[in-house]
Image 1 (cartoon, rainbow over the protein chains, first blue to last red):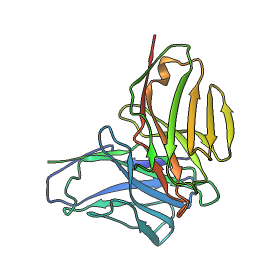
Image 2: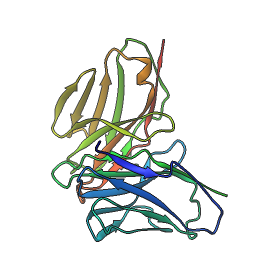
Image 3: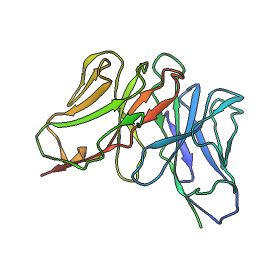
Image 4: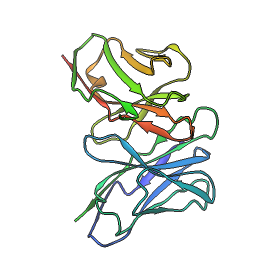
Length: 113
Length: 112
């Protein structure tokens, strides 16, 4: 079964702690993305990567970090510097090409108290 | 001005009728346009892609694109209660085709 997996589905952390969200895909897609969604709002791009060992900041990268050591994996770390980390985090992937259709994983809901 | 604008709704449509969802975008150079469906608490699901002016049909869904007016729409025929969801319009950026800008979504409710 090809797809994108994100784990865990729900994550709870105390303020001041760093936390890493997992994203794995077996679709052989080149590009991977991280978005954040807040209640009643659209998706905002955090980071994206078009090839292994390379990534770019999106619109709201402050307080987040990523790595892309393998084509299949694109973990996101939410650091203690992120002021409002509680949100729904979505990972997506696409083939690099003409159209860039993005497909999403199931998401991780992070709550920081 | 927002880059991708949608009416937030809710849009209420009777079962069996046609639901019409609209989206405008500001980047005149955008090349690819997408509609995603998102059920409450779930991740977005790609339901339609359109790349050239005109209509594209897939089952009960029709996407319409007018690049001159910077307007894209989604029609859902024979609306079903299972169509009740938030629909996100998404558009690629001319400056970076791998980046997609999402609208805030239109909440659609199909009433029996």
